[in-house]
Length: 84
Image (cartoon, rainbow, N blue to C red; front, side, top):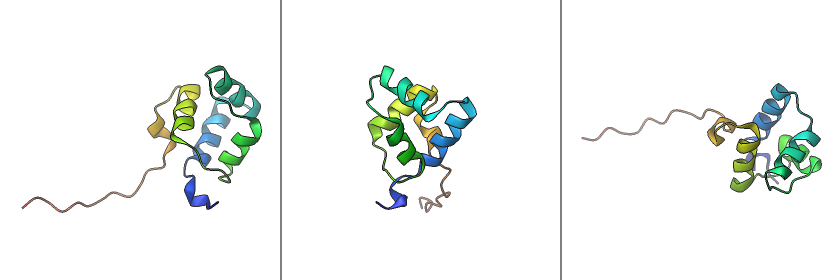
């Protein structure tokens, strides 16, 4: 899998580290929310070896109690043509 298929893994790792959580703790927290995920899957997501589904992004957001948009890095500013 291309590492370009997962752009949020680094931010998941960052938020987990900032919260002081282990990968096992995050997996358990997401399982309580109803998302089956293991520590190994989280490790693969954080190292960008696995893609992340939109459903899992929603569960990560619920686990961290942040909006899903916070996982995505700031992108380039698009310069759209002005209406004439």
